[in-house]
Length: 221
Ligand SMILES: Nc1ncnc2c1ncn2[C@@H]1O[C@H](COP(=O)(O)OP(=O)(O)OP(=O)(O)O)[C@@H](O)[C@H]1O
Ligand SMILES: [Mg+2]
Image (cartoon, rainbow, N blue to C red):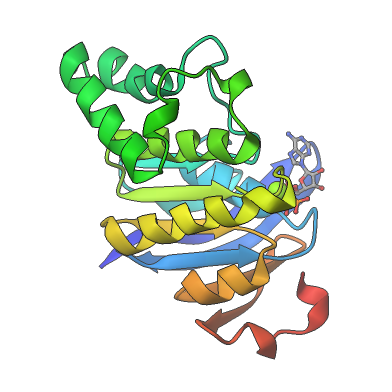
């Protein structure tokens, strides 16, 4: 069953078309890797899918907004809240889950991302890799059916990339989720994606299946 259906999607900023007729159907539990040159429209596509950008024409069918999560390059944690408070926030405020229960859910998620010992740290006292793992735990808290990642490791020091990729891989293998991930980590994308979509100038230039990234020309990245 398709969990996301994108038909004839165009997106214009000012007078310039940034997405030029994207058609893509994504099945439940599929992992889609999205690659392509800078400025091609990858982030814009994810932002349109989750509803952070209006679309100019076409249609995007998705699960309801509260069933979709997004992890950003820059973490976007609340600086004045601890790791565990960041994860609890939407559970308590939006879902009205009692604090104690929300705390338990958040702690389980911190265990999942290997950060149970950092529960009471503020973001400024966490490394980039740790912040991103908290952001992933936070995105999982509301049990999304679709999770979008926009270059989740590109703001990290090289020695922290692997710990975040491992968590994403674990999420991919253990949660009942559909994943779209934009990344320049080609080896990782090739490994975890059922399909790899190449975006260029707002078009889908190519789609290949898992393990076939090498058939793409080098200038796709
Ligand atoms: N809010 C905006 N207003 C005007 N133009 C925008 C806006 N957001 C994005 N763009 C333009 O849309 C184009 C695609 O941007 P987008 O961020 O989607 O690219 P990308 O493929 O994610 O690139 P990168 O790999 O560098 O992250 C760029 O030319 C960018 O300048
Ligand atoms: Mg981008």
